Image 1: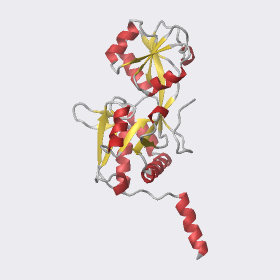
Image 2: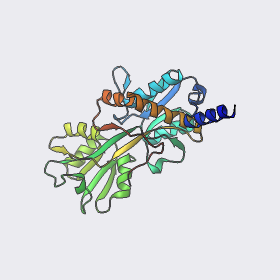
Image 3: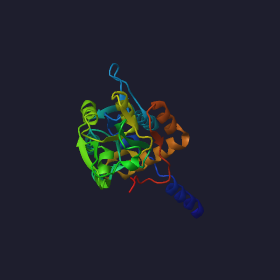
Length: 265
């Protein structure tokens, strides 16, 4: 009998109990919020309203796991995603992990990496990411974007200019040579390059922004369930298929091994 209880204890430690549907989605519907301006997460068809993308697929799959319907809503900013989960307006949120965002919600392990790079003009002497941090250069990034927060910590010689998420305005700054480079994820930059004659995308990437699922602060049971879910969809191949089906450039499934998200030093 003692041996049986020992085996049960080991199993309970190795395989954390899944939180119930009532724990994860207490209202009976899994309300998921994502960053509406980030195609790496999801995009909404303007004509039909349909939402597709890797994060949307993950939200729907989590809904299937706990047998509840899913409601997806976009937020205007990363802080908007965090505020929705923190206030209880959403049950889970999809947002990039960044140390300055920690504190008011719980961050899951990284499920996906979104590669970041820079757009420059054809004649620019900047040929690779290593050329970005040079004296006299002005590097732009959207205010509060992950790459901008990263550059704020890391740039030593170049000047950082924080701008609004306005593609037309960014085009004017770049073509007018008011900035030397604009940093963002590779999908955004590829789209912007197609709309900006005389521009080119650097061939290499700065780093992969860790994408996570956030849950309300203090909900260790829900966080454990979400981390277990990410392990499951990674192992089954569902995560890789969701990324491939999104058609978004510069995405990759994050490796497993740790439930703690982090960014490069």
